[in-house]
Image (cartoon, rainbow, N blue to C red; front, side, top):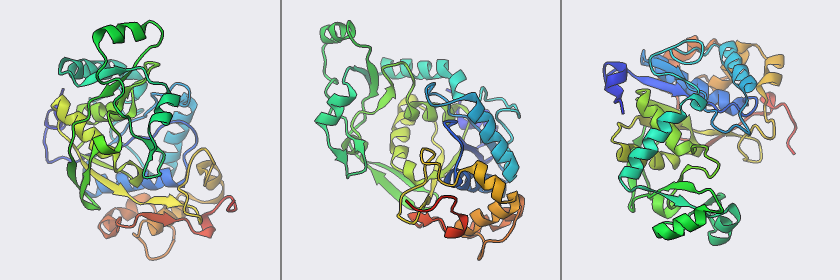
Length: 329
């Protein structure tokens, strides 16, 4: 696997990325993360990548990918590598990178670090309560010690998923905005998925492989993915690949404290574009991120010198009524 130095030519060049999933129209929270990632890279004279995470064929559609790229361009967020821009680390659609993920699985298999899992979703939910009430279920390791004969027998009636043998102990890293972090992957998630039973590669594997192969040195994303960082660091270590630095920004929430979601069409970008100019929306995002003292029109590039002012230590940011599209439920 190529290292970051091999791809970028220098460890000093910052290579950041925005990696959205084309599963629907982006909302204000997605744009906020995109702006933060873009400003961080541009403020360091780095290289910005756009990667489309379209692995799930049931949820991700090419039309959504075209739409989200149009929305990014409309807001003034460009990219140096990615769809429409080219680059040496393509393809930049995950659906076209499946062979790379299979190569990584073979590496992990040779090390004895993955195993087949035949558990159904119902069995998993019955065996484990959600961790800390957040809906994340810990896998109890049911299939980890199946014999070869048991695996052959179960494979006759059910295609297995693949799980990574998460090492015991804590994973520690310094978040760019939150400081020292520590997570026990085995205690929180157990052995996590790297490929689903339908053959679709899991998020943790794909993002770790892609960040390494694309020479990504910096990942700026939402706070909801903070704990996932520990899983990705374990995979990168097992694959012998360098790890980027991670920074997690606060999530945008509604007045009730619920984070924004595509499913409920919170602050849909299409409707936002009908109400705001790019500068007006960008200025509002900059205000939410703490770059401006008040929401006033500003082009994305005008915010680059202000990025160092951002305070991302807050756990969440409530969207003010002036930006709301839909009334609180």
